View 1 (cartoon, helix red, strand yellow):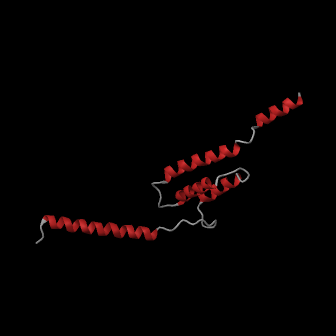
View 2: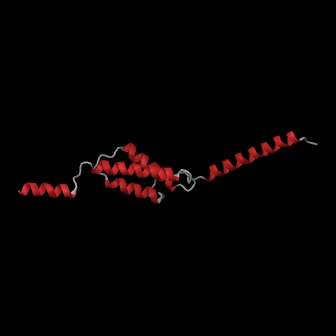
View 3: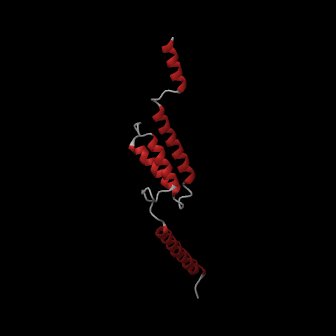
Length: 120
């Protein structure tokens, strides 16, 4: 007959084996994120379209890669805990890209004032 201490050790070992088996099952089920256009998720497609708008501006390749990786995290259904922080980081990053792309552009009001100054 096993003592209480032996039963606890056996139960602990069973739980360890069970958790290891479940981790292995989850790892085998996880599909790798593809960068193909056909299999890309909606967020990846949207980020690519957003980055395509800035083709004339100097978009650093590292920022573009980070934006695409964050979009892949948002498209991954198994990465739900990382979703909110990835969404915030992607929003901040796209805001920086928008600001950098629009830094050289003049507003419509500035254009009108320039036309007015030339006309006087």
